[in-house]
Amino acid sequence: MSAVTSISDWFLAATIPLAVLTVPPVLHYSGLWPNPVLYLVPTQGPLLLLGAAFDQVILTPWQAVYAVAYPAVCVAGLCWAAKVMFVRYVIAKSGGM
Image (cartoon, rainbow, N blue to C red; front, side):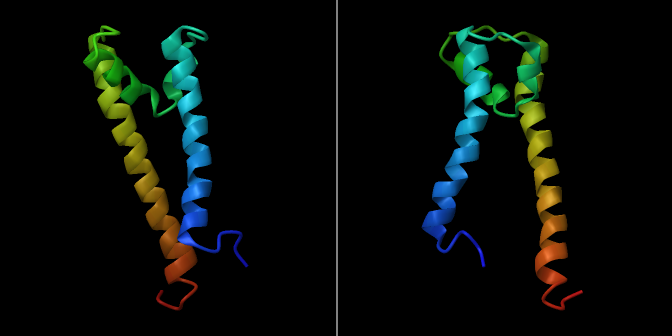
């Protein structure tokens, strides 16, 4: 039995990881914890783009490339993982493969 019984429960549970992924880039952007390891968090790039859009930060060329490419690579990797998991746990268990 699943802990999620409705779509509303799923949406509520999905906000927790999003909130957690938002904290490290905000710490870096605000200057509280300027650590280069925070560039591994996929939400760091879009936050840099927002800062550049409102003239709060000036992006170097590598930061601009990172801000666009790294989140795209992360999304592609997650799409691939989702497809593999869907085939393994939904299609294969229903007898489709």
